[in-house]
Length: 130
Picture 1 (tube, rainbow, N blue to C red):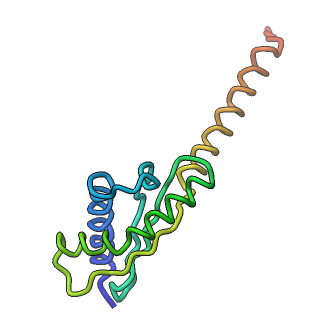
Picture 2 (cartoon, rainbow, N blue to C red; picture 1 turned 45 degrees about the vertical axis):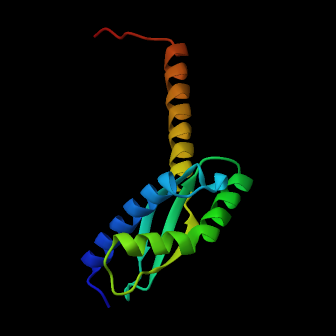
């Protein structure tokens, strides 16, 4: 089992390389709006779970994941040329909903704040003198 710090560093390096490759080398139009949010490398450094955020409809998100799965061999080969490793991890792409969920939570918080401000503005102000 690899050092956890090494796993984390390797994940960050793979994420950076994947982001660059997707932006510059992948020609599949389905992959255009993909952002790599996190890469989790297994303890034996043989597998890497790539978390991908995609803005769009659920159909567009699934199409993007399929495009990345189709390009996985190419991406793995290109990363292996850029990074010196004994074994290049297999890439498994997973949809990351954390950004969309964060945006939804922010929207809910803003809605509650606006409702509170509206209620405070409508409430009569009373002054008490002692």
